[in-house]
Structure formats: C-alpha cells, structure tokens
Length: 363
Length: 128
Image (tube, rainbow over all chains, first blue to last red; front, side, top):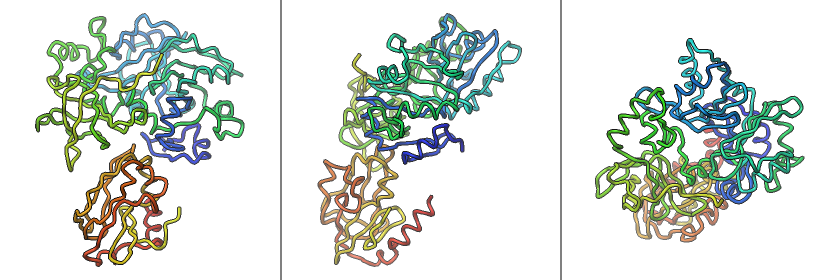
C-alpha cells in the first residue's frame, strides 16, 4: 500500500482512511456531507497525490501524445492544459487524463487506478520516437484547493497572482529551489487550483494552508475522497470505473466534445467515426429519483417494465437534498423529462431524466 | 468505542435491547461510522412481521446501501418516526435516539446466539 506525502497529516486529524487503487487515502475527516457543503461555500484542500503524474520529454512529445489522445493537442500553448481521453483501437476508454504543455516538456496526469496501464501504454507506443517518460508520482504531491474562496485564499497565503489565470491554464514557478506547477482546474464544480509540488515541500505547505498547528480551524479545511465523489457527481463530471470504462467509448459516455475525429488521426479514431456515423445506441443521462432512496452503480433502469439502461453513479446530493444519479439509457428513452424507474432490488423507485450538470456554480 | 453492556449484538452490527417480550433494534456505532453520513432509513410499518436472520429494512448512506437485519422473529410494534426527518440521529446517537424498530417477540430462542458486548468487540477488532 502506498502512503501519500500527506499521510501523517491525515492521521493526525483522525481521518478515516481507505484503500483506494493501492493507496491509503482519506475518505473523510469530519464527514462527507460537512466537507461537501464546506467546499461549496468556502475552501477545501483535497489530497490527490494518488493520481498518476508522468513527465514526457523529447522532441516528439506533441506528435506522440496527439497520436494517443482523442483531443487535438497540436496548437496547445505553453502553459495550457487539455482534458482528454486515451482509447483502444475499438474506442474503449483506457483513461481520462489532463495533458499539459510546459516550456520544454509535456506532462500527463492520469487516474491512480490506471497509472501502471497508462505508463505501459505510453512506453509501448514510444518505440522509434524521440520521447522518454518519467513517472514522477512518488516524488511529488498533488493538492486540489477548491471552493469559491480558493483563488483569493491561495493568493493571500502564498503571495501568488492567480485571478487572471484562465481555466485549464497553469503557471510554473520555483520557490527555494523547489519547482511547482499550479493549474486553474479541479473536480468539484467549484473554482480552484490543482498544484503539483515536490513531496519534500509538503511539510512547509501544510501550516500555510491549515494554520501553524495544522488543526484547520479557519476557513480552509481538508476534504476527503468521499466529498470529492459527491461534488464531482453534482457537477456531472465522469469518473473512471463508473461512467468511463474500457467497455464504452468517449462519445457514448457523453464526452464527445473531447474527441476530434475530423481534425486528426489517433488510436481509436476509426472506431469513433463509425460510432458517430451509426448514431448512438445509448446515452449518458442525469436522473433525479423520487423520495430518499439512492440509485447505486449497476442498478437496472426500467421504462414501462422493460430494462433500458444501467446506473453508473448515484448519491444523495448534499447541495440539493435530492437523490441524483447518472447512467446509460437507450437513446430513444434519453430525452430530458422522460419518466423511468430504478430497480433497487426489493422495489422499483420512480425517476425522471433531468439536464446535466445537476450543479453549476454562479460565475 | 464503547458498546453498552446491557445490549445483545449481531455479527451484522445490529444491537438489540430486550425489555420483556419487546426487543428494540438499531445499528451499532461501528456500523454507523462505517456507513458515514446516513441519509435515509427505509423501515416497514407497524404490524409487519419479521423473521430472525432476515432483512427488516434498508439504510442509505452517502457511501452505500446496507440492510438492517433482525435477530429475532416477531411483529413490529413501533417504528422510530424521528428518523424520517432526522436520519443523522443514527450517526450521532446510534444506541439511543437512533434506534430503528421495536419488535414484539414471538420466539426468544434466537437471542441466545446473539453476542454480548465483549464478544461483539472481539468481533469488530477481528474485522480490523
């Protein structure tokens, strides 16, 4: 089991730790609901050091990554990041990732559960190209600072200027010989940043974030993976292993906006073109359930007694105090407003298709 | 974590308080902590018959759906109505205000196999 560079901090606050993709990570400190609502109103820090961080050096970084990614990367500026998928030849999603162009290299952030697979995939396709990969996951830490107060908080605590940084752009910096990277991005539906820092810098950062005693008694509090999941679900952001798997393609998964089949070739492009030409057999939808039961992953979705789909994620929304879910349904039953039911096992529960995302922050 | 010594426990983390022929059923602090924030408790109505070792209701938390099992057979004579509006009572006071149902017991034999507090603590420490 891998420990995050923040492990001592998590345990000192009494966080409940779980095994997440081979990492011991905090699921919550005070409670998922509390941490969720705090993120929507103030500022939370999420330890996301378990995510894979891979540096790509060499003269052919752009062509190499463009061949593997669904999104067009040519033309990406230095300081710009792109959300993208990597797929198999048949369009099955290997992972969703953030690819960033730095001054002299590229950087790939992938899901913890897929890190070894993606490192192997990159290595396998690097033959004969001027590229080399370095897995920096274990020598760095990654923190997401999220919430309506995130930007002013970070600016004040670290004497940074971030307000003008555009979403999905980043800045590289250096402090006392330690290199860091701060991106305007996140996985909560709130404004905020994600920072990659050397692991050895963590003990210096924690008192700045959480106070000298690191008790987090101010506006900035830690939040765990539990709240991260409920926050991303309200924002309708897909999660690998749920909405995204090797059994589904990017377009069917509702992420066609990051698939550029008309602009370039990439692994999986032919399959995606066929899927696009044939039309989608199923679609990703948002649902609201009547009552207080929760639709869990893999629960069947029914319409007029007939199975038309499957739930991928569901929760009790702390923000709206409603039961919300995402799932795949047959295209002809995917219209907003369609009445459905979810099979909870002992009984069926009425549900309605609603627009996604469930939550959109005020700008 | 202290589990009251006047209660009986099931391996599936329910507690039972025996008062004459009425058994009050709830889930333990350990179970409530494992489930995290409980959002809803789906319980049957008064008059429903329940069987020892069978499911009585379902508990929804942010994390998972779990079953409420009964350790006795009988008929439900009271349901904790407070949980409809305040399911968080199960997290904050699982052995008190977070109780779930009261069952009028027809057969007390199943109670003999339920654990006491010491045996239950052994059980949860063996689960890590």
